Image (cartoon, rainbow, N blue to C red; front, top):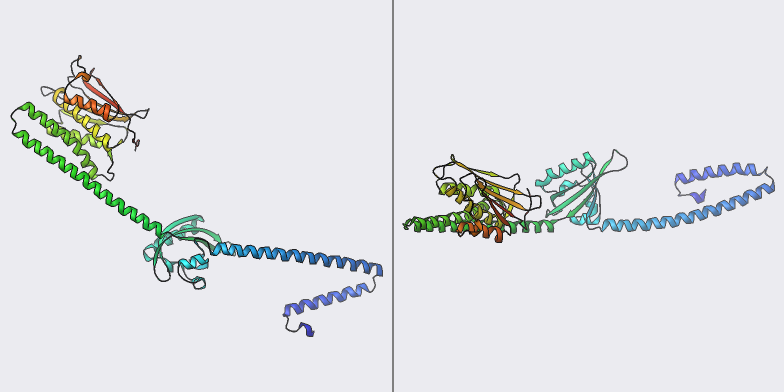
Length: 405
C-alpha cells in the first residue's frame, strides 16, 4: 500500500476493486485445466496488444486534435474582426484577441463586462432593439452603432449577430462579430459633405441663371415701352416669352432636390400659366388640359427644348386659334410609346389653319424654331394635322431617358 501513497482516493478505490476481481479469477483458475489456462493467457496477451495499438491510435488522434485546436484558436484570435460570445443578459463571456484590441483592453479583463459598457449613450436604444430582435426571431441581424473603447475613444462599428445555444436550449447565446467601420463612415461623411456642397452650388447656379434671365426680360420690356411699332413690340414680347420658358426650368430646378432632371408635366403647366398671364387670356374661356399617364422625367437640355416648342405652339394657339373672343381648349399630351420613344402632342380645337398651309415651307420664326428643336436638338420628328383644329405631334428618343417613375 506504500506505493499508492499520495494518489487520489478514486484511484485507490479502483485498485481495490481490481484486486478483488482478480482474486475471484484466481479462485476460478485454480480449478481450470492447464490447457485452458494457456489459451486464456494467450487471449489476454492478444487483448493487451490490441489495447496498446488502440492507445497509440488515440494518442495520434489526440495530437491531431490538439493541432487542429491550435490552428482554430489562431484563426479565431487573429481574425480581422472581433468575435464575441454574449449571454442573453448582454454579458461578454468569450472574446478573441482582435475583439480585446478593438476595445483596447486585455481579454481577461474584458470577460464578464456588459457589452453596453462599450456602446455610446445615443446608440444604446439601437443596440437594445437589435439585441431583442436577434433573441426573438433567432435570425442573423446587422446594425451599425457608435461604440467606444476602454479609454472612451469613440469609433463606429458594425454588429453581425446570430442566436445560438450554450449548455442547453434554455441557455441562449449571441454569437457576435464586431467590425470597425470608422474609416468607411468617415469617407461616407466626406462624400455626403462634398455632395451637399455641390448641391448648394448647383442650386445657386440655377438661381442666378433664373435671375439673369429675368433681368434680360425686364430690360427688353423697358426697351419695348419706347417702341411705337406694334409689330416690332410683339416680336420683343415673343422673345420675352421664350426667355421666360427657359427661366422657368431653372426656377423649377432651384426648388427641386434633383438639379439635373425636370418633371415635364409640372414644367408645361408653369409655361402655360405664364403664357396665359402674359397674353391676358381668360382661363374661363380658353382652358388648358395637360395629360400624361406617366410621370416623365427629362434631363435639362431635353426639357428646355420641349419647353421652347410648347411655348411656340401654345403662343400660336392663343394668338390665332380663337379669334373674335371665341372659347376653346388647348391640350398638351405627353407619354411613352411602346418602342421607347417619347411623344408630345400639342393641339387646340380652334378655327384651324388653311388646308394648303405647309408648315415645313413656312418662314415664320416660331415654326422654324419648332422644327429645329424637334429635329436637330431632340433628334426626333414633327408632324402637323389640321383636320380638326390644329395638332402637332413630336416624337423623339432621349438617350438619357430614365423611364417612368
